[in-house]
Amino acid sequence: MIMTSRTTAPAASAAHPVLRVPPASPAVAAAYFGASLAFHADVSDVASALAADGDPGFVVVDSRSTASWDQGHLPGAVHLPTALIPEQAPRLLDPAVPVVTYCWGPGCNGATRAALALAQLGYQVKEMLGGFEYWAREGFAFETWQGGERRAADPLTAPVDADADAADCGR
Image (tube, rainbow, N blue to C red):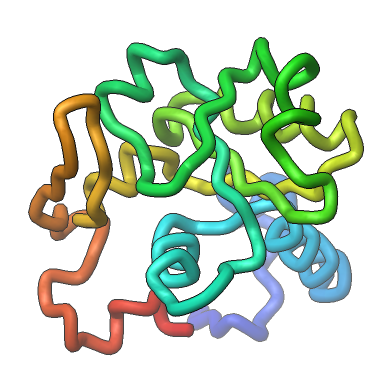
């Protein structure tokens, strides 16, 4: 049987791991993915907003330790380790300005914990997916305790040809 995206899968394929739990209805999926975009921003979008002239409309918070910050951080980021958020956020952050948190990378939930702590204090907040790892892997400039640095883009995370249509993930 040839199936298209609009064909209902036969009952036998429900045993396959991909369809064991059926996909959500389009309306439920739209609500979920729309909500996801309210909570997350990707590295490329953050970099683009920070590179544009003028105020990007948000502040970036690095929630990692001082040793991690010294190893590398986004230019212009505010260093605010998660454990210090309740004490220092009111002094460092304007509650009227949305915050984008980041930590090491996809294997770290530090940015999620920081976003939760900030939301509990009344800040509007998003988490930057990919964290510092993907910032560096996509070839964006970063700062270390020794100065600025930039690595070549990893072709597994960013387009090799900057002029390619893929540079914006098909937006």
